[in-house]
Image (cartoon, rainbow, N blue to C red; front, side, top):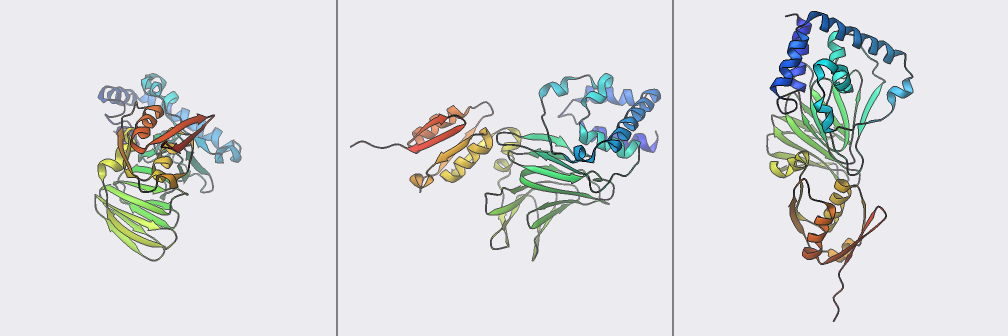
Length: 323
């Protein structure tokens, strides 16, 4: 087996784990790659795509690309139609191996989710990414060649592909998080006063302008944007990962927290005088199939509130008790 073939197999096995396509699909792909003529055809296909990309308009290359993942994507017979199911991150990974050409540092790829959206994909090196609503992730198209640097806002989970020679570095606001191969999350919403990094597995180093901390699994660090201070805390692994599995959790949340989560999760604007609910908290775990109206019905009883929809706006008011 050639060195290039070994690299391809390593990336394919990483990107298409049993959780994604299953052993049978992986075996089909490995069998397909064992055919020399098929590998040559694949290399030619990517070479043509690469040449076309180099001559395309740079503005088009720099446009923000929004990712839509559907279940039908996984149902394709990729050993016959592999080009149809290889999204841009996987194409990037194979291009590094097959074509061995450098790309310009100035070309930026940005993946963005809107309110109510979530995304799941892989970076060119095989690092797995989950993005929560209203989040962005950006990286240069030279990612994986001599650096693995990304910039994020919102809430993003990483399962980093191990590569000791190229540390994985996340920049968010005024902090950086460095890892070699691990699982962690970064949360930095513009309307929140902190940046948080939470570790699930492995080890990460979190640094701000003035200080740095090393985390072990189950720990998180919060960076106070106003005070420029890092604070280490314990981290609830189950709660932290719930959104990546499609579950929405409220745990002693204030009304401000509740409204923010509803906006992010369901993609609606919430109008509420939160001062009317001062001192009240709300706890609930929602299953994947729960609708917004089911949630509101429960909230109505627990928090004594009224609600109505006006176009795309959810208006919440406190119930008035008639004497």
